[in-house]
Amino acid sequence: MSKLVVLAIGGNSLIKDEQHQTVEDQYQAICETVEHIVDIIEDGYEVIVTHGNGPQVGFILRRSEIAQEKENMHPVPLVNCGADTQGSIGYQIQQALDNEFQKRGITKKAVTIITQVEVEKDDPSFLNPTKPIGRFYTEGEVSNLKKQYPRWIFVNDAGRGYRRVVSSPIPKKIVEKEIIELLVKNGYCVIAAGGGGIPVIRDNQGKLEGIDAVIDKDYASSLLASELKADLFVISTAVEKVCMNYGKPNEKPLDRLTVTETRKLIEEGHFAPGSMLPKIKAVLSFLEHGGKQGIITSPEYLRMAFKGRTGTHIFSDLVLPST
Image (tube, rainbow, N blue to C red; front, side, top):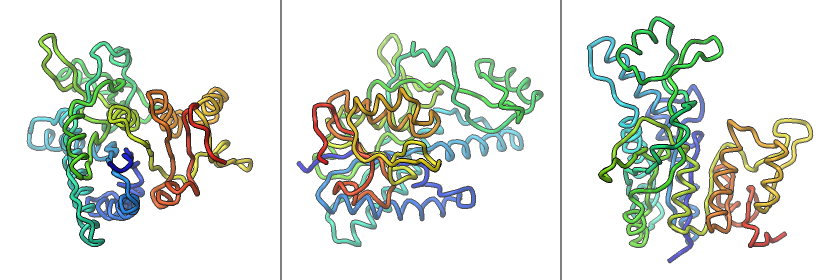
């Protein structure tokens, strides 16, 4: 089989900015990103696509709130929002891929797998939820919501109001791993683990049960790449290369790093916790679980990055990067 790549596409591949958030805008952004993905496939790689879903889940939650306020409709649980976005975003990526395959005369089909990701029910994050979701609420609204949903937790967000926070547990197992693997071996381009996957836990009888939480998309993608023994784990984001001192006059792009070198940079505080640090840690997790190489770059530079001409490449300490 060709080299296997797990490619995690970031938010800029779905929603470019606040002025382009409609479903039509999202599809246009996806089509542009898909052209670069198919470049890689055309070069002989097998690609599994994963994606984020943060804004889309927020939209569903707000629609649900409005429907409940106006028409007394039942609310949509967060865990179902994740499943809904896997279907809707997966459909758009799948359609865009199939259209691009047809345009280029490539005999290949895309398929979306609604993916569950198992987490541990005693994950420490369940004791300290920190991931904000949904809109801002007033103190009075929070009081009413607490009566309806006593388990919900709210925090005051810098004076802008209150937001609900949920846990962000560490992903432990891709439930549909064998199905994804089978489809890839049969030549399909798979879209999986959207939004970090649907978080599930096992009860005492071993049955799966969905739980309201948010799994980091890049961590889940890293786990998927590790479980499938992918040759490459790639994170597509908004920048061509990871940089030290990003946005400052002494900004320095990073080309090739080992795990040891990357860990040193983390310890020195070079990567922002809310943006690049989770991506770097996701790549390191892949490499520390047997992977050989990770790449971070933007969609338009994917093909050049795969040829080693740009992007930030992080290698296992067992693999010496070529200079």
